[in-house]
Length: 243
Image (cartoon, rainbow, N blue to C red; front, side):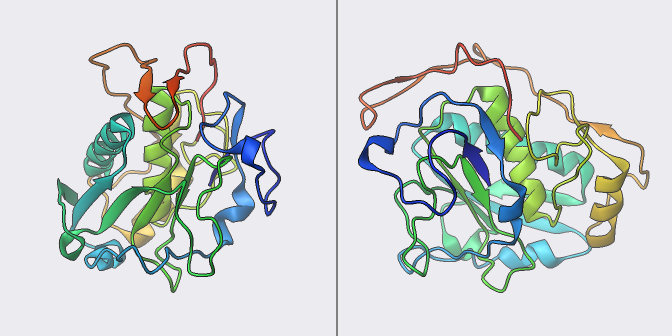
């Protein structure tokens, strides 16, 4: 669960002045939220192929993207390409809940089954865990969060890692570390051992794997303009990354 510090405390209801877009604040992740079991409200269907994440062998992941921010969808496509190089899986894009195993969805205006805000304005991204009884294959994102392309890519790799069963790693060299990723992180030996206990690795080795950062076709600090925000959201002055 990615959080923009300085906006709201966990569990507090944000005031109207704290609505999206998210201010450019330091971004960090709150690891205690890993065990915060959540389920999307009845207006959103579960991914019917989510059981693919329970497979110890080959996985075929249908991915559905319903975010208004094209930078986020592209980041998750690239992140799935990275995970395809590490695990025995293929992925393809789908538009139907019947065929998706993973859905990346805008969560800033959605609510969970208990009526709580799914993704408050201060939160950047939130993933479900397969071990939860309410697992539906969802990753919720805030489309207004002022992240760079690189930050969204690292966030996507990290959140998909959670969906593959990985927990936070206290090693700052790991992409599963809970804050301040800079693009130099790896899947550590501990990450790979954990993955191997749940899924089939492409290469049976536990040597650290550096996270490959895909080349950018445009400036990595792209400004995304949205009518809802009424202004440009730019991370041009940011000098840090998030998990």
